[in-house]
Length: 224
Image 1 (cartoon, one colour):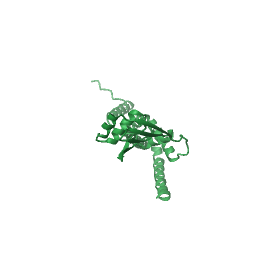
Image 2: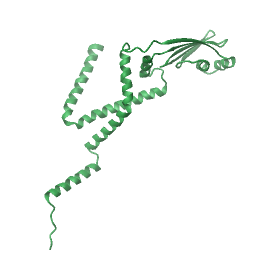
Image 3: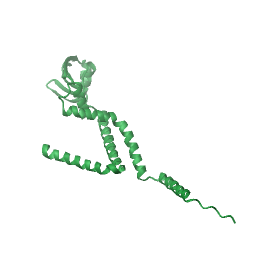
Image 4: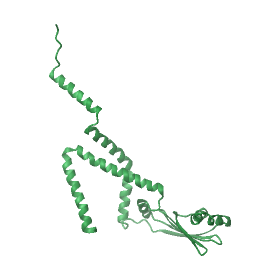
């Protein structure tokens, strides 16, 4: 009878390691979790790169408006006239102020979006605002004569308003929200990756505690 050959010890160990490796690949252990975090962090970083630069830069210009000179607002006054049919249609609209502002905007350039308006004593006083500037409109409701006062914002003021989302519209509000969520997720993923670096984990946790203590301490000492 021929006896089957027993596998050598080295071959058995190699086979066991291969089986363990294939089993690990089929599951989702700590290594797979960290690889997923690293992949998501890389893609989110590429997506949020410009947003991070923009909001970081405009955060500095908001905090230090004297660092950059973006030019003073340029004021310009124009006169316009609304045809009687268009004037009457605007005054009869459910929102007369908004309708008058739209009618004036079709006659002469304006800056910003409609914000407010009121009609008092035969005059309509309208206000439009946006990152590019503001517009104040006075319309004589009897004749349709309009005075349009526009103040174009400088480059730095416009960037600061975009940072704050001031009168920038719903679409830009979504840009701010999405950028904020992406940056929060990216920061959390980056911090999770510290736990995959055993030799740097303790210093990272210590630095986190120190930075948190500094922020709280500066608030209580210099702000509160």
